[in-house]
Image (cartoon, rainbow, N blue to C red; front, top):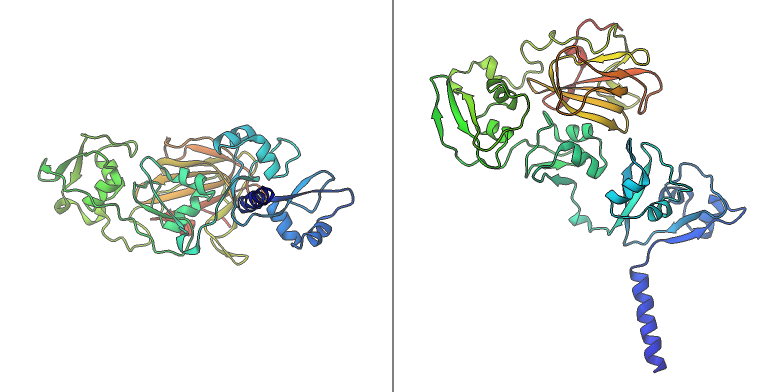
Length: 393
């Protein structure tokens, strides 16, 4: 009987080891990270990373993770405006107590852009890892950005997106360095009827969106919106859309010269995003990294204007840029306005040229008050001086 008891005890012990949680150590008076790292044979950097420490300061009674269970990898979440531990715990199906323990928090106070461990996942084999996301029905680019804690503008860069419109089944890369495609899933043949000698009509089928329809007729989403006077990209099943007859659409309207860097009649039409714009940092390489816009100097609270009419595709917080507004315009143009003190528009707003969309600030990684402005053509960042005239500096 005793042997059976010992055997069961051994099995239980092995089971506990297999599924054990992380190993913790309670800081004693006089302890330092260096002393603890030596005791548990790990580096100080590993201790800081595992415990999400911003400095080497620790206190007596603090619980530190000193060994990770190899079967559990941390899942991180970056705190956003309006978050608190209760809402984060609820959204990630955990408890405030666990969040405080996993992140060695003294209290429930958290700050914007703070990185928190919200859960753990089992590692996957290298050959099973995926570095892309397949878009599901109803998902938005902003939602994917939040899910993977990747800035939305980085997703635009990684995938060379010409806009924020994505479709179910599309592959969205979560890292740079991949060949991207904007091909939509195959579109079933749809009956069309000739509306005139200049246009045809298309009846929207279940599951279709403007992107897929535009791809089917080799036109752009902007074309379809302009021809049908659509204020946004939302369409419904059974809706009748007019599509210009390709034979009668001029080369300029169809923009067949898609290799051109600047679209016809665009440069020079944009206004400046701020009054008395003075450039303090140019587009191009800066400190070994690509600076994908220009920085314009100004005072706190200076009004920021939309340089062209368009639709707000994003308005929120991004790690490096702080408060950001991104606007989609015709001709596959996007403009980005970063480091704002406050955003004055929301996603889906239709803005006119010259409308105040934000005020100048120094949020994000900014050392002075300024506007970071980007001009993107078909998903690629270009020198904003190609779009704007009258800039000083």
